[in-house]
Image (cartoon, rainbow, N blue to C red; front, side, top):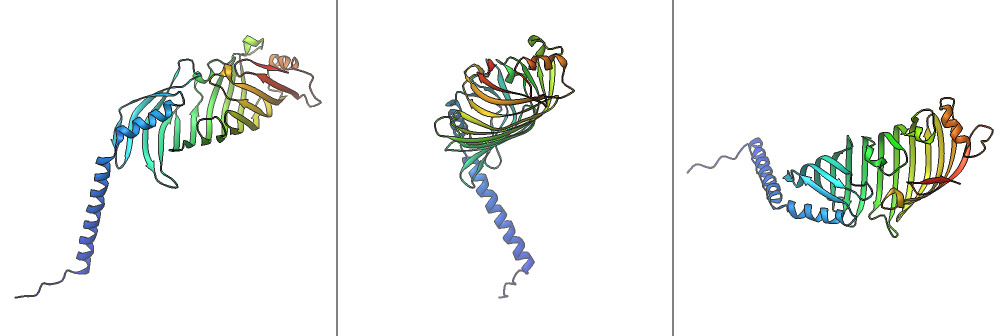
Length: 281
């Protein structure tokens, strides 16, 4: 009886790798088949609906290895007066570190949205290179246009009680439209770039930094009490407005009605009331 010849080391290594890969693939396939996509999506939608937000996804399906995909979703948010927002190319995947959570990526406002949320409603959000949609101006006295260069948010939802939050917003190409209704000679005002930082406790948002660099330079700080709509969102802001030579003379004349300017032409004012009907004081 002849002895069994041992396999060469290269052959043994190849067999070991093949067996390992097959085992891993089988394990992942089992997890994928067992992953409760429908129940997870229902849980997420239920959590979101508690905030008064309704989401209607389309093309919902499981993705490899443990995710959920949707071609699009229509979002109804309180305060947008019947307007719906839209997400495209949605992907939900589990995130295990540093704690179990769900990661979302999607196309939003022609930009890219990424968010991570855990079961304690802690959320981190990052929106890049998006446009400012017209529906955000619903209920406001002027129309805002421009591009969201960057929006980051971290905090715990809902924005109520002692829940903490922090956000940073950078807008570019910012324009206010509808100024002729206020008596200005031109209908739009190019504000350029806006940079704002906010720290919040519940629905009380502290504006720690506000800077606008355009035809009208703006610096400010203050407090915003967030409501369900612009009409129920209260503001208490301290602003310094500095006209530049590029500012429309009609708008410059309107600013003169707000108060006497300093030696450099800047005007300081306190803005109160609501976001829908602000008033200077």
